[in-house]
Length: 505
Image (cartoon, rainbow, N blue to C red; front, side, top):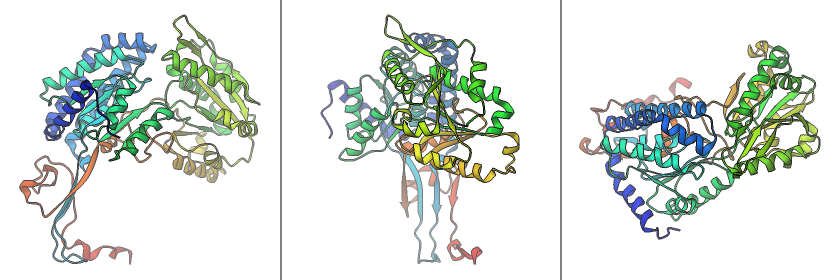
């Protein structure tokens, strides 16, 4: 499948391949300083970057200013992560003449950078999931040369961000070819097909993500591809929770649905509520005059308009908040939130028209009859999602109410089909923290064992290598007895195998 690249792309890939050994060999503290230098430079240039982002994406100054901060925090988090070294998963089994299965050689295992990686940036997070976003931070922290395919929705911002990052990395002494930016879908596909590229990352639509994942898998030498694709993020709210705090739930719901014009992969697309609990009325009561918000680009606006029309025309769907969308002379769409309601019976009958994600400010309330097995609804309607949410009353949260068995079954079902289970909150607003899991079963992601947020994200761009009876001088620092980097090491002492399993007899 490898194709002849244009001279420009050949130069890009060749630089990345040439940089790979030197960048992988950089000391962790040197790489960390370089990554922090990028974070500092982005924040120093925040006003200019935000101004470009507002013009190209229609997102607000407050949203974009906060997103630059988030991007810088992500970079700094990964700087600390790579120096700490726990992600290397260093394991040491010293030679053991008394091993239970015969003489054991000295075996030591760690993780190494995979090599050059291409990252396809996102439209809806022009900083946090774009040129220097979370995937890029993890790739650079892992020690992999990075090629970013800029998103067509914010090309000027991509160039400006790339210029800042390139200068910061060069000033920090990183090898030429450590980071590069390219434009155009065809260019991105051509680079992904190149044998010198060892992994891919992507945030975007199911259709494009599947195309790229298939390309990565069908190469003569397949490579890992980590795509974040689509999610509807179902929410379940109990009758007691609504009775206890209907206004609070309604306000939080509207904020989550309307934030950034609903153009978030974690937007709550479906809310399952017991019939007759009055949540729809509470939503209407708190809605007030909701301002319109520009969608990211004309293509997304047209797609949202079509999807919204399809949902509104589905049998049994009634309007809670009608919302709307208007188009300006430039083709940009300006939307206000749409909330609709449908019975579970009609939802089942119209599932083909309703269950697909609506990328924009729209959500569906599904009214469920008493006695419905909520846990069974997840596998009935969804393959996988990034998040699932459960709103409980104060009494239900203690785990002592009569419905505790049903609630535990629902939590278990959610845990099987989402990457993050939330209680009494809203899925928008992904905390950038070590324990975060931002992934899920297909079609939420192409690999449900990985995350694109949190420190575990770095492991996507590493591969394990074991060394047997290696002289100390030839071992990676993480596996040496002297452990010069001070990374965590899991050591299985000689003689230990003789007692394996004894405690369970």
